[in-house]
Length: 196
Image 1: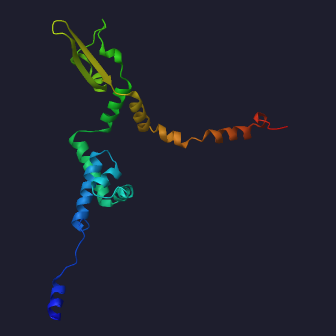
Image 2: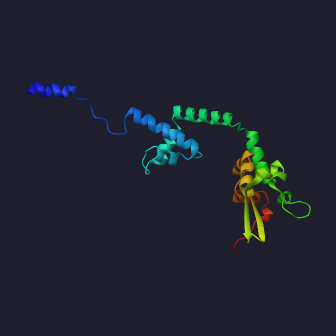
Image 3: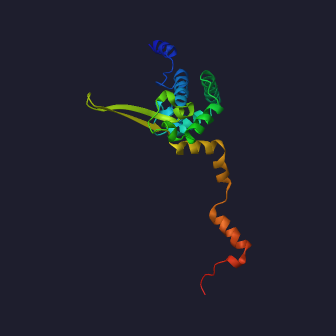
């Protein structure tokens, strides 16, 4: 009987917890990469979708981004996507400029009527976020309404500033209090007298 127990014990393999084996870890990493790429680079959300707990997702996401294989896969996929869709820095900057320099007057003819979409130049069309066409009134006396919505300049402005490195320059500037203290130190006559 002891021999039978011993034989049964030898034949057993150690049980692996569900989701913790090498295959499960590889699957989680693959899901993380896929979700990270598609969600615009949110590591925490990608970790949650990959099966990590919400409590640890932020730290797990940051840890996964330091993994050499994951970093390489994300970089390779980004290059493949850019090549496939002919996405270049010039194209991105061009779209920012189109939004930033959009002039609503280009939507109208000289007489004040709205132009047809086919009459608009490429830069104007690319700056439009949406065009709505609506028919109001009765069929006998229809009123046609066209609504144009264009991209917000604020977003384009911030993207252009990032591209030009303007935020980095802002970060290098001294805080106003330091500048004020330096000016007071350099010019004693400008000091404010406190008390009597």
